[in-house]
Length: 131
Image (cartoon, rainbow, N blue to C red; front, side, top):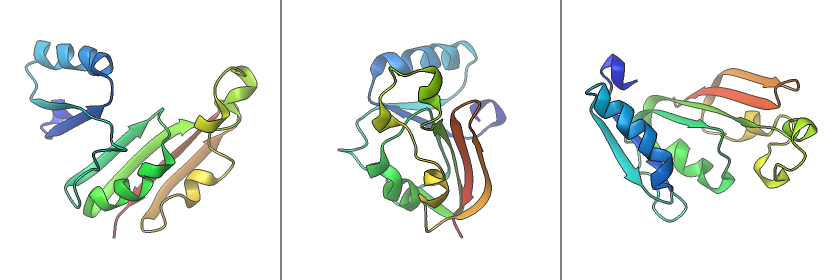
């Protein structure tokens, strides 16, 4: 996104998780804002973002904040693991896996533009728009 000229805010609770993207952004001379924060304690600002991306992370309590963080016309793109992921990775915590169709119903204020669930890959993907 930053390579295409968008202003990007990268948030993670782990400094280590942001380290590699920060190094790569610096190497490419990209302007990114990095924030180490636990979003369960520091909510996202309301109507601030055109796009919210969330990959391979599941914290259901953040879903209402993610909806509210989008500006009107904004988009949420989310992809994370489903219960099918545990078929090949039984050690993966069940609490971090979506039930079938759960992601489709997770954001009632948004209009679903695209939804896909793959049993083979053990993932669910959502593109939803805020009216």
